[in-house]
Length: 599
Image: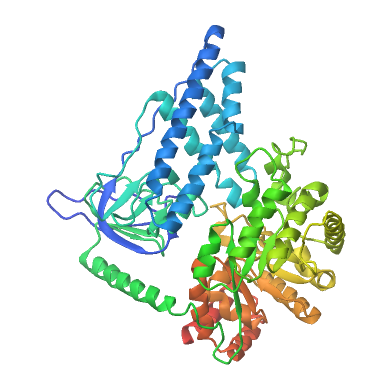
């Protein structure tokens, strides 16, 4: 049974000041906002569903087509408004709205709605609702946080279609007083795109998660935000004083004078910290005792190159190529992939780009691949990542060809996800060699020599056979997110067990240590590209294991650099040895935090 962590409080007696309320949620965009609440009255509406006569089917289908066209016009207007935002935010919003436009133009969603109108003979609103439900169910079973988070995009587009069909107006924020904190049950990414950072202080919602586009948009706009706040709406009204702490995930309603003073002081501290971090950008990443460390950026989209360069990243430690396959029914061809990858490689201006081959499951590409993959009972353990690529060699060959061609424009490495055996690496290397020969016969310029071929260490089997894998590949990248999840059999997206997800569990640390030592013995590079790489708390431990390369989101890079520059590597190595003698995760956490407190 789900527990409400933010139970409602009884109202204050008449005439007395309202008591302070503190609610917890997910801090998805760092920063602190203080201001008056502006409560958005969303209100659910009933979607009509009814049967239509056979002679009304074509008229109903045309009504839907016209609604989709009107929704497209609305999105184009939003794009015009978004162009006035800061450059990086405008690009984020534009990418999102382009994806929404794609869903409204001959997509699986629109084709499915038209099919339901014709075959089921139901009204357009009901057909949209049914198709959204079916797509959401399909996405939810994919067991991939990035893809599953796209459920929100489908629902938003569907909601827009239904509102157009029902002639209901959309929320606007032009009349919101300056400095307001938006309080809502939910803000869609398109809603968030309407928020002007210079006018809106931040926002908090009842619904939403850290992986969705609303959270991404908040971070891009630099708006403090807390999502998933249970019990948020009752007891708060427009005009109430509110504090949104996007760092710790707390929301204070009617804060006391002491609470306000504390947060205003914290705001000043954060402003000074941001300025201090900027000064680190061009300084070397070196420990106090003179050891150089490489800090790379993880990027998901071509637009992230700008952020990586601005943060002073030494290169791209993980390029997720899934963006090439999203929001479409067809597969990207070699030329399209090559152009995208080439732009990223050139954008990094000589810094190495590590491109990971496709890391999604067969069920996620069922439409574009002709639907000939059977549905997986457990997608996390089924046909996905390198297993899918080897099952469909043409898919892999196209991607490798694009990578080889992009590698002619700057240094590039190829990374293989979810590797379990040496034979998988050898099969990919054979395919890579064959693809290279074909391209040379075509007279196409490719990377020379061939790019290094690396392995993601993200399942226990790979970590435990790291010695053997190190003889078959050119580098390791340890993916601690999946490694922790698979080792502990915990889905951190499941709120019932997420609290058990612990990267400091002795078993997880031993697998990281074992993999690192295997790489060092084989004299191949090893990096960490999971979330712990971007958390300054773990820097001393990872460097103490012998890791000299970390890859993280660009936003985390300067904070980790600051920690490393204040770190004595000899002492960190000693503390790592003490930690690895422990058998309790709680004791490990204490030893690590005590060491960090001394720095």
